[in-house]
Length: 165
Image (cartoon, rainbow, N blue to C red; front, side):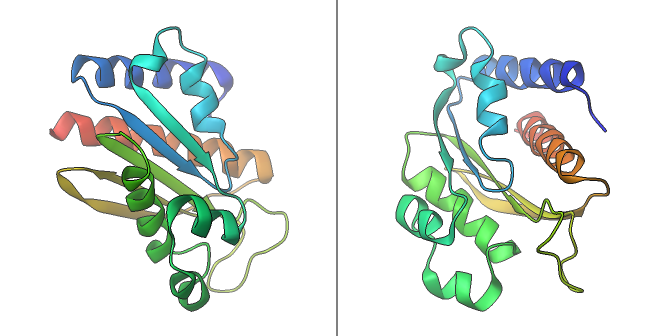
């Protein structure tokens, strides 16, 4: 499980890379409750690379703040590839960002099903010039462990995405 120091170091690298590329980020978070946004805003100067963060824990918030269609939530659920994709597209549409990431998942201890057990997380990354990518991950551990791993994976995926640009 990543510790605070590891997450802080990874976040510093992400902020540096965003700044080097003059990219602005927007973040849509559900199960992580703003953790990625908090890590980024812990860094002095992050206002140059972060436009805004959306904490959309409820389905209604996902609809109101990000424009996630109610039909998507009804058909696929809040924890799905389709919802993560809609969240990242909504974060781009409702911000001044070049790049966005979105996280939705089941941190537990309850809420899991056979098809989506506790620890299931969908992370999406998208940009103004590229179609979103979505990854389904399954993490082990308690609520904090799942959330920490989701935060790390989201930041690592964003870093990887920027390396490819």
